[in-house]
Picture 1: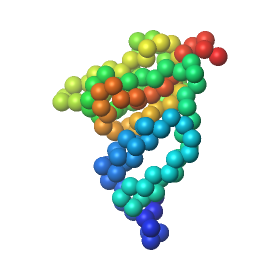
Picture 2 (picture 1 turned 135 degrees about the vertical axis):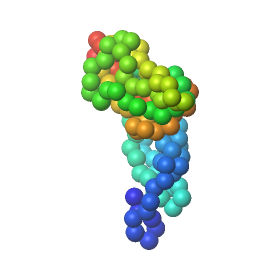
Picture 3 (picture 1 turned 90 degrees about the vertical axis):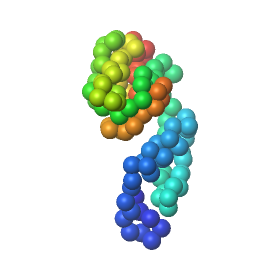
Picture 4 (picture 1 turned 180 degrees about the vertical axis):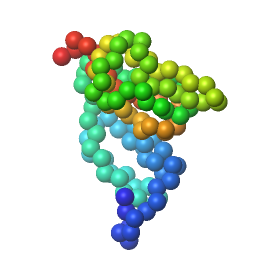
Length: 124
């Protein structure tokens, strides 16, 4: 990312968190955001109709245990949420393919925040 003068800018954790929070409200389409002199352009697409959204079971730091494209089994831990020395598993609600991670690794997540999207097995 670059600032208005064209020189490289430093992104802070707070900047990234703010941009992610702003993007989370968008369903699909093109979006341009400006925050602290930084411009962010993104093209967002809505998940397939049959897709399931996985939400955070707790507040903490997001630690993925799976990669996009992996096949998950119902009840399998696809990530951990770490807080106060504890790790809480984020489990897949059904068998399926992990389509998208909505939160970057090591990001702070809120309770019930959307963190991943899976395509249930047999939904094609």
